[in-house]
Length: 180
Image 1 (cartoon, rainbow, N blue to C red):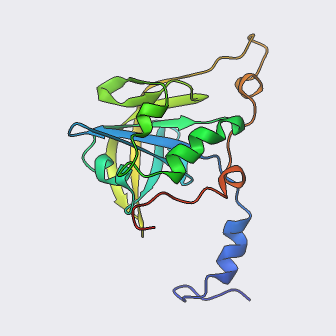
Image 2: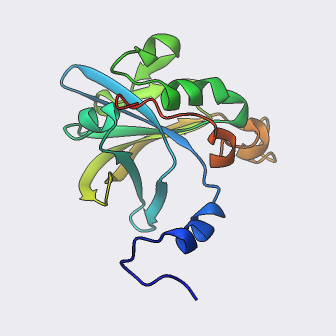
Image 3: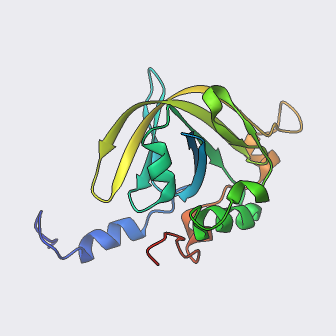
């Protein structure tokens, strides 16, 4: 029998969550003359018509502090072999390191920071922010997108880029929050 709703024993829920292996993404934000970015494991399409996407940022994260006043965010998918980029955005804090000095990037729609070597990316207008525990959800309206193309029309985009970085690939990256 499982734990009752509202109890502190999360053991049974850990069984469920432990089975998940979501795609990881890098979320970047720019506002008030600052840039920030972090590795994110909580994200999903959340509407079909119109298309909407939600990303969840930790309140302990510098990216959250910049994103809370940003008009747009950029969301980037990485290939498994881009582990160094994942380690930079997941294991370092922008409070100590200029992550953008170490990657190729350009300005996108609305001043968004777009990582040029991402497998796929989009810029989304922030429609709303939703509190959800120790993370805040940002519901995004995609307004610009791009990514690596397949070698031919018959190739699937995934085949051209290889498998995407997933939680299991990034599990050993220790978060670079300033509190550590």
